[in-house]
Length: 244
Image 1 (cartoon, rainbow, N blue to C red):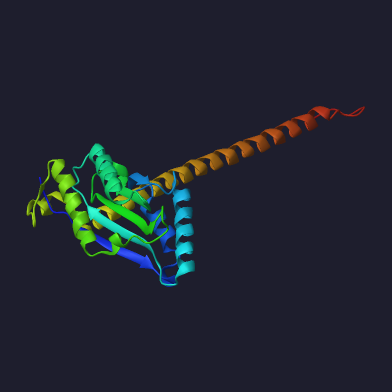
Image 2 (image 1 turned 180 degrees about the vertical axis):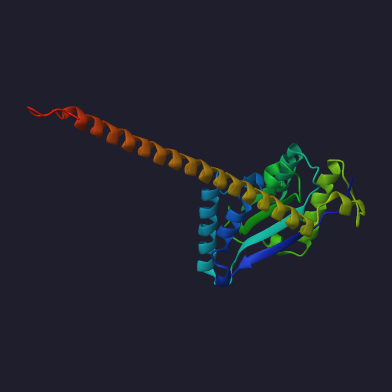
């Protein structure tokens, strides 16, 4: 399969972006998309979010315009296997993120059940864990070129042919518009199922209430009959009186 590596690198910095690192981490690790992740910032989402908040506050305390989070996103073929995902994650971590705080997330598409728009997210802090200083390597313009070249090399090892502008890519990938349309259709279907379930429960409750009302009416009639019967049995004609 032919493949072209595509991605984007962005940053968050300054007090105007305060609080966004933790929110981004929560977004990346949402259960509907995240099927695999690797990080040295914690063992679960809560720990990672807390670590991001700590790093952000520490950087902004030193400089009001400090860069506290760098983000990378890049696509991978939809046919990539879970073992290849783990191998790629390990390779990226060992080459680039041995001395910085990072989180790497693989979005497998619909809980990994249906491969659509598969891609990686990486978020990291450029401050060295060992020295406490910013690693200027990540701010070099050559970093992006070298990073994507590394990804291309790894995908080549998996058997993908890396090309500049592959025509088959358009047929093998799902466009953003198609992905949004499919997601809307799935969500609409889920809502319809939920509404059907609610309507079914309402119908059952209605039947139960009607049955309860009927039982109460029968109980009232039975109680009325018992009262009438007891009254008639307690009546006795007086002396000289004969019942007609």
